[in-house]
Length: 33
Length: 559
Image (tube, rainbow over all chains, first blue to last red; front, side, top):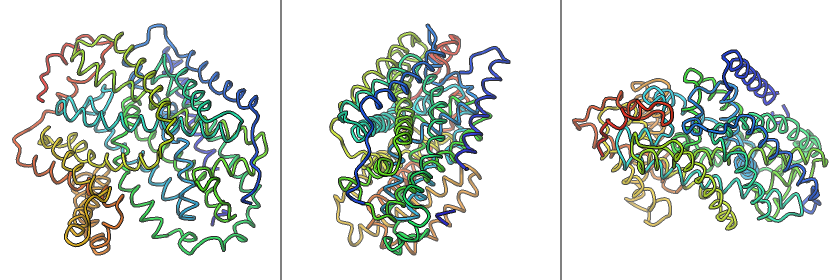
């Protein structure tokens, strides 16, 4: 069981969310934060 | 293995890494910095931060060096279930607060601190109790992160502990001071990416360098039966149960969580906090497994202190390049939490002390408020550095404060839902809980005989309160009552006569029970019928809405 990706998936979810935040801010013409 | 030579990074390498890390975060903060910062944005970034930045910030803030070290200590002490009992319940602190967070945002959409909302709901004494506990928690956390930085730098380089503390403190202050919370959450994104990316490489690298998977089979004899079981009762009673009791207490008592609840766009609270729950749990349980590996390998912690296990394992098994990556990972973890603590402290001093108390409602000058926030950061950093030089036992302090926060949980949560809760009931509940908690926690009264039974009975009621409140957030009052009663009935046969022998756990549950009973009994007959719409009027932006400030000025708050 101990011997038997999750971290990288979480990284991907957060990075994708960040990219969306930046894009949304760009579309609305405002700062991302 | 005990005598293995630890690898070190040279002074030059450490200085380059620190300059690159803090220089990079400072550059990030200058990209979002404004010549004229906004006082509200300095505290909550305008209440509409997106999912990616919020999830990154909540994850980075909750992952700190001490949590990784403590998870590994738990793995080394309690075996395979240790990191799970540390990381899982720590992660659930983030998850279980979000239903309450949505309610808090509904009644106070533009508040900056929980204490500010308590002032609007009850008055001064409730506000000061919550703000005071928030300040104590954040100062301890800040000090802990500086200590972790100093210890790491002195362990992996020829620099001294205090040189390390001062470098870390100066670096964090440098990039947080001007833009406050905005700088904290923006740099959190880069820090969490670096942390998660590093840990995904470093932990497997240490396992394979240590002879995984044969080390697991060869070292199985080093574990006791309890340490080898995922269902260890020893791990549950000493690590898991006190942490379950602290789940809501840490979430309520920590302004860094409240700040993110007020900052994230309201419809994104759930995905943000669910993502941070999984991110924190994965990272902390994973690093904690290094403690389990050390147990299998029969490694003795340096200086007999299990808190040294994580850097010790890294310095023993990693090549220099990965050791440098490990160094940046820990610096990122402690910096992302330290900058959040600075932002939390500054927002409390800005909103609760200056905005609500010194200047008075509606009269606060946003520019003075910003100055108060920045001065707070400088003073807090100096104090934390001074305390860090004493090298106090941080985890003991945090466990103590976490149990203290248990006294606040029911009065705070009830105040957001129940119109009848009065300021007097809130205050009396918290004070009575503290009066019951302290003598039991520190063994000031003998708990044999009747006193022990009384503590056990109240602690069992505390179990019902904790489990009931957890259910209440997700499923409402009816389910919460059923779940709470079932928990009491299920726990009573095992707990009565035995629970008082676990001082940390029983005193914490006692605090929950006493504050709940006193607050409830003083409220249920009260004539108060609070209008929650008033909170919206009494809290809000200090900077951009002079008309809102005037409304706040006109709203009388009973104290």
